[in-house]
Image (cartoon, rainbow, N blue to C red; front, side, top):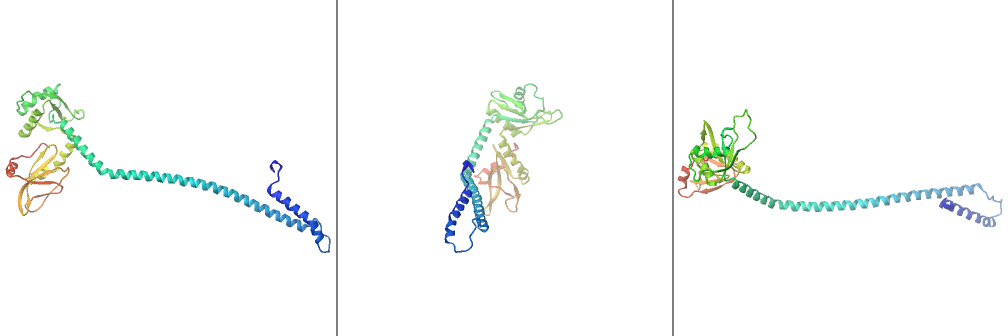
Length: 321
């Protein structure tokens, strides 16, 4: 008993004993005549002890229930805190989901803008390369120690061009990884002209005259474009053999658009029309009827103006790809 104070159970036992003791004289006075009762009657004490034990048992159960209620209170508080945390998490997830939905809704516009910006960047890069040409087939070390002077002397003689003013190059070098000694394939040369007109003269002469040669080695010339434009141009390579087989006139508009002159159906009668292809991947399939081919891709057919048919007949296949 801390501090000398009786516990609750012991206190109740004392009070109960005192009440019985005080009541005994009254019982003796009012009892009917008979044998005198002993103050220490065993049955009465046993009954009291059983009652006290039951009271103590009830109190123990109550204390255990108090502990359980305390535990339940703690668990309930923790559960409420967890629920509050879950609610905060759910609210945060809802906000993030809403933000993701907003971003998804903006994706089409962003994709359109990205394509537009990519097209502009590609166009700017292509324009920045307008003074460049690429030469293929010139043997390694053929240029000596000064490749710029070598090309300024070679190109006028190779294509029979009289440049006025004289041809001037800003810079020139080979491109690609270092040349391997056991490789017979020379690296391409890229040359930057000081004047754009002179670069166009070389490209035009190479297209008109066809491939030139040095000591039996074929020399090819091509314009210099960005990687994306080169990939678009290569996509047309799959069409060229089919177009040649079907004897269809075609050509390439720089940087990467193909035209096809072809006889197509128009209300039962055939007309000549020009097809401008700007798709990256196309396929041609032979069909019966007036039109020998069918384009399996979106494209724009445009009716030729009077006299354009003769002009298209005189046009040649563009071999610059």
